[in-house]
Image (cartoon, rainbow, N blue to C red; front, side, top):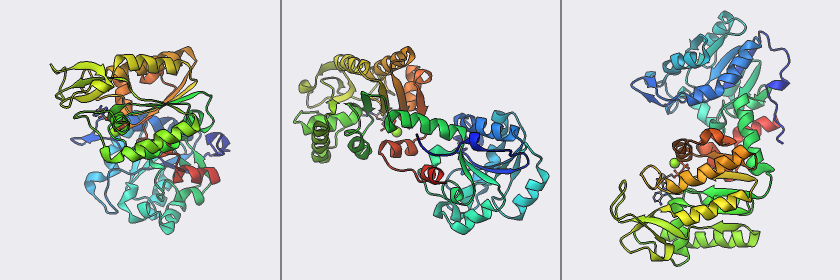
Length: 400
Ligand code: ADP
Ligand code: MG
């Protein structure tokens, strides 16, 4: 288990100033937050600190202002959404450092919450500028990072601050690190990985990392076509990166050498046009795909075999849908395997961890996200972790 400090390690924090890095990069439409998931994820940490009597100052980025003030990207625009989620008043503070912040801290009482301006209004944030970080740190007593999803970036408020103040993982960060540790750090074996999605090119590093760490590698989605083609199978008009054939071969060889069983589909769902329930839809063996057809989902026989493989496993890590799940009926394989994984998890025989933007959407579509042991909404940070990379914001917490 990682060696980071959590909120459990805080002593008496009454009246102390907590600088808390959160992910409040909420999707917006017409000036309103359309999805409060990120705010909900960090609420427990904020409320726990406030209830312990700290003055809680929230540090967050919002959009991509590239080091300049933009009124359309001020965190003041999400103040109301954050107040709604927390059920508390939040004071907006239009700076991240300096006398305005200092004066605001003087006004805040123990247990009050302040929302600082968009950290990316200052170029020092993304440059991880030491002086910028120090100016922020000067107003705080300790630092909490609860933004796993931003911690693949070494920015002043995701990494730099951890070196300047006593640093702690927030509750959401802690839960994420614990879940990810159980999935790939020191997992119960056998371990299965599902890697799907559109392209091999975006997940090469993930596949390379996983082959030596998992017992079963289930490859689905468009990227499976690249592997099938590399094995000499004609995939017709399917999405396929023919130029990656050699890389695909190398991954298959590495898997062989490591004793990892690679599962590629042997039956597939194909169509001549990419549309919902197209008339040309059919199921066939991978060797029977016609030149004018494309593979849009894993076939029912293969899915059943994948379910059987999962039943022999204790741990599952999943990134990427098995088919073009947004368009029916190409969601069938993803939904079926997700339901199997969810049922095994509910029975207590499988630890299931999933992540990735489209993967989360697919599991929600299947109605099983709640049943998975852990679903990461971290996007880029989750993928980097799947690649086995050290996330700077996490590493800084571990060293602190
Ligand atoms: P994530 O966001 O979970 O990491 P990706 O972005 O890698 O996942 O991939 C998701 C996309 O892959 C979806 O939009 C899905 O439609 C697409 N996809 C899956 N299978 C296929 C396929 N056989 N052909 C074309 N696109 C596919
Ligand atoms: Mg995606």
